[in-house]
Length: 394
Image 1 (cartoon, helix red, strand yellow):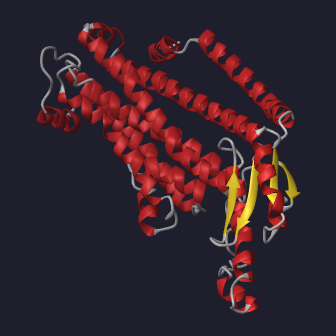
Image 2 (cartoon, one colour):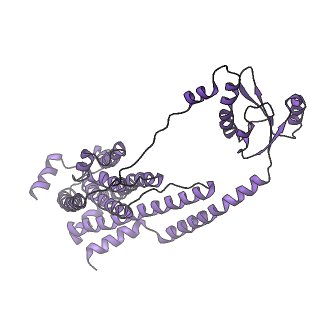
Image 3 (tube, helix red, strand yellow):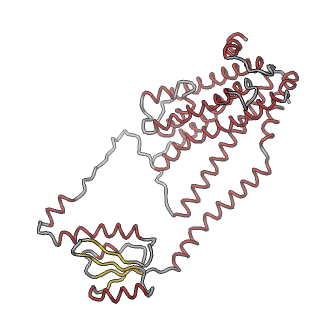
């Protein structure tokens, strides 16, 4: 095995502990299994708690309360005081009647009910008939005037099918996962390279294997570790979403999703992490003391580029976003989100991938040249002029 792969293997397993990962996956599996038990358990709990709402027969539209999640019974309005006593005695959980003077629905309870929101929705739906009944205006005319104005949406036969909530979640993931990978790379490269430079271990390794193999080993090993972190977070996100949907009984509107484009998006995210890993390796080799160096903040620069697509979530097909998804550096953030939310022409994708691969090679070359010059400098950091000369002339 070459020195390059030996260093890559060491860097990867330096932070990757398979026993801890296995325990984490087992805990995740247990949480996932428990999620399927939560919903039937909560349904059983709710079934053991029968709540009763009594509504007066003077309500304009008592049928509006027929869809509530609790038992609804009707009482004669002239026995209202008697039912108030029943409420106080705990025989019922709520008492509703129509106030004709204020034209409002009154609800009396002993404590704030969990079904208040759905009751208010039902009460709002039956208020209009009550007000119309006491109004001299023509009911049909008022109903026509007060009816909400809707919008009929149609799509061209050749249009892309509409996406759903799942597509939006994938769009957020296309922004979040590369960002997680990039900031994970920040921590790993900062600890690995800067620490080795401080304790002079980097000089020994450099003299033993050479700057090319030393740098490539770190890039391969630590980038692979960042990608592993991205995959772990993606798995946890899938599990967490599945558990939430199972607990709540909700469904996510999938709509139209181009799964091939999604696969390209997350594959492109790996290229983005590789590019920024080379950038961070170059910066980390120039830092002498992380406690006093102002260059540590430069390693946060990728975060700025990774956050930019948030401003363009609703404009994936605009010319500006298309350009930014092809141009190196900005493409690390814009191309994944564009692939998820839109249909990217194949030539644009291939051009962007080619430019990204070339950019990774160029950044790796620059990092190697900076490493060769700066790793042996102890006690001071190279100036920006020295860095430029190293990149340009070495």
